[in-house]
Length: 346
Image 1 (cartoon, rainbow, N blue to C red):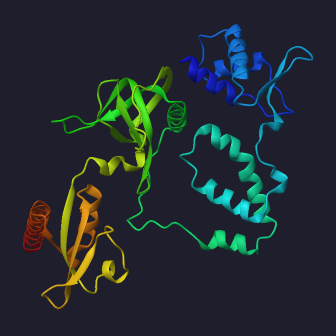
Image 2: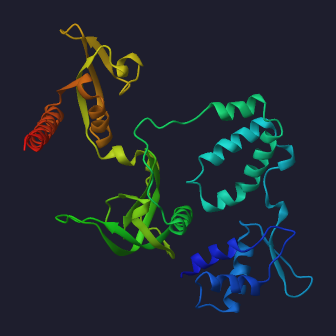
Image 3: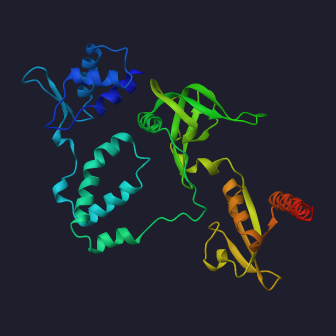
C-alpha cells in the first residue's frame, strides 16, 4: 500500500485524549490491516510528519517511555456543552444526509451527532423533536433496494477526493460491441467527485493526464481501491463543479408539449425552465407548453413517466424518439397478446 494510505490508516488508530497509544501498538495495527512491508522506524517517521503538519490535532506525551500518541482534546472547534435544541436539530439532519462527507469530517463530527441525539432525547415531546419526526425527504420514483457497495473502497474514494490524490482500482466496465460487463484494473485514476443521483451514488473520474472525458461510475462497480501518493492530473475549472457535470455536455432544445389540462404536472404548478410558457391550444382539453431545456436522459425519463398526458410536438428529433418508442411498445405488447391467446386456445 502507498505511503499516503498508510498515513491515513495511522490516524484511524490514534485515540482522543486522555487515551494514548504507543507507536508499537500502531505498528501492530497497521500490520493487521494489510501494511506488511513496513518497519517500526517508518511508523515513527510518519507520526512525526503528521504531528508537524499540525492539521490533525496529533500530539505526543514524552514524559515516559514508550511515548503515548493521542488526538488533542482541545482540537474540537465547538463547545459540546453549549449545544441548544436548534443546533442539535441541524446536526441531526446533517447526520442523516452526510454519507458523502469526507471521512475526516465524519470522524470529527461524530461527537456532535451523539450530543445532538442526547439533546433531542431529553425532551421527546418538544417542537424541535416533533419537527424531526414530521419532515421527510421522500423519493417519488419506484424505490429500489441499492446494490451492496464495498465499504472500504468507498471510504478510500472519499479520502482520495478530499486530498486530491490519484487512485488505482478494479472497475467494472462494458466496452463497445460487448454484451457483458468485465472487471478491469486501472492505475492513475483522477477522482473528481461524488454525485448522488436519484438515490444512486456515482463516482466521477478521469483516467490519466491526457484523456479528458469524465466518467460517472456506480460505486458498486469499483473495488480494491488504493490511494496513491500521486496528485490528481486533472481537476474542475474555477467556476465548474461536479453538480453541473451531467447537463453541461447536452444541447439546449426548444421543447413544445401538448399537455392535458387535468394532468398533475400542470395542476401542481411545476416548471421545466425559467422561460416556460403555457398557453391554451386549439384543443379545449389541452395546453401548449414551451420551454428551453437540456435534452438529457433524465428529461426523457420524466416525459416517459407522464405517459399519454403529453404529446411531444417539437423538436422533431425528440418527437421521433417517442414515435419509435411507442411503436416498439405496441409491437411488444401485441406479440405478447398473440402468444397468450395461442397458449389458451391450444
